[in-house]
Length: 235
Image (tube, rainbow, N blue to C red; front, side, top):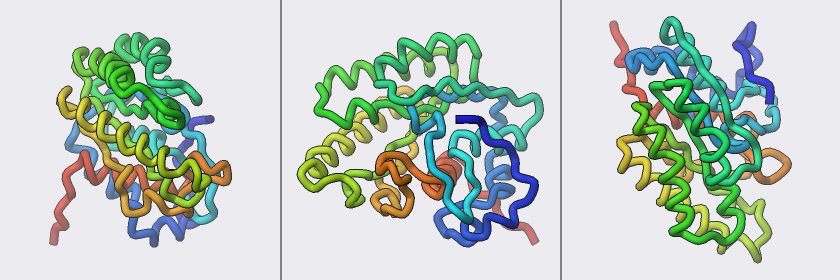
């Protein structure tokens, strides 16, 4: 996916502006500003690579690009790299992306991993090890690790009923594993898996797998709400 750039005008995104589950971009910038992060590395699979579908009334930008652009607006001398590649499993993300991410010397890392493992039955201990070996070196290098959960696709009605139950259990387990490992490493897990819209078919693309532009807008708001203090209104 090509990286998104700032739009010339926000007027075309009226639906997003009125969506209670989204966030105004300028507000997001102000809430992120105190964090002071200057180097962002983005790792993972198609979710952080930005695979999505446009949605009229919403800015066609992934949540990773939204975070990149907001942090860039919040600080000076900001740099970012997106190493995410679609269709990779957790072990492949570790093998192909961690070394480059560590070499970039990020102070914050945004990552999604394990979704491609969870589409089919997986060995829980093996996936735990893969996630630990993926996230551990990033935290050890001094980066604050931000992991983002998957929306609750199996309960959206978009997955055939004969597969939905087992898939839901796997997605739940993946989210629990990721949250626990992230916490152990001093990172922050963004729990989009249990988001109020997580199982709403309206946030998904027509491929019935990835989020659409609304889904990414919703995920970005959840990221900001989780990692950034709310700016109090001043009189």
